[in-house]
Amino acid sequence: MRVHIATDHAGMELSSHLITALSANGYEMVDP
Picture (tube, helix red, strand yellow):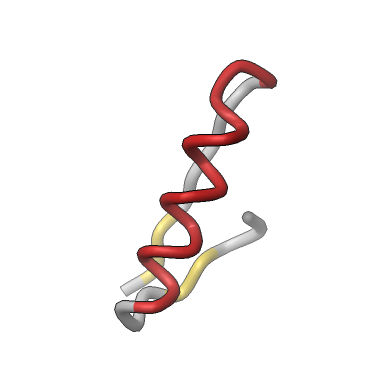
């Protein structure tokens, strides 16, 4: 499954945690 995550500067820290967790569980990240 592909997951697209978009955020502004205020959400960068949360985005980083989400990308790490989702990637570790086999999700394909698109342009994180």
